[in-house]
Length: 332
Image: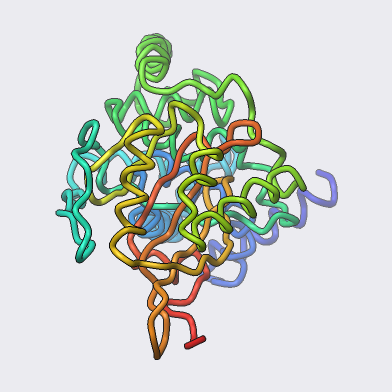
């Protein structure tokens, strides 16, 4: 056994003996990727964190039964995946909410969304070791939303096989299934995903690049000055806007612009604070007030296509603390 193996074995022995610090050392390297896995399966950062904690508790209590036939990482993914499947079968998902912006009458939606429980996932630290586990397209809101519309077991198989690259026999072992049933589920899941999601033909600018910053800067300027013409120039023809937990969804530049203009026409003016979520640029929105603090009123996540905006997802202000932004800004 090499030195690393001896160290890992020693830490495992201490953890089995009840050493909490040793258990944290064993599982710490996998915590973020397990959280992201739970988020992909559940679509809710809140639910994902709850399931992650349940996973770690189950692992702590069951560590004596870990025989080492599979890696610790694989064993943890087995627990997490089955906890997620249980959550999707039994949890009461957050219901759709009604329109709640005072003084604004929105245009009729293009359609009603099916995933009102969707929440943003704050990005990992860009220089952290966990960031490499989060390929940008597999944490995007569009991808995660599409997953929520597939049957739970198909989601598990697709994520474990195509995103995380586990072998079919490993996935079968995790799910208590046969390898053939996993292959069949994967085929159906891929077909279902193709019907609901496709990557943009023109990719977004590199994360954190000057090109990305230029688009975001133009959006901030247009939004903060209520410049509808500048906003029109930024949006793709097929731009898509959603706002969970409200089910309203808008597709096409004309109707999205009408929605945004309705906010501005009501006299609402905003200050935006940059953030990042789901591998995408994001902005906290704060309502300007004549005096006193400026309350948070929303959180926007943008999907870029080249040098324009192809989608905007607006979340409620309740997510601001979870993404590292204040609930309100000081008075100006």
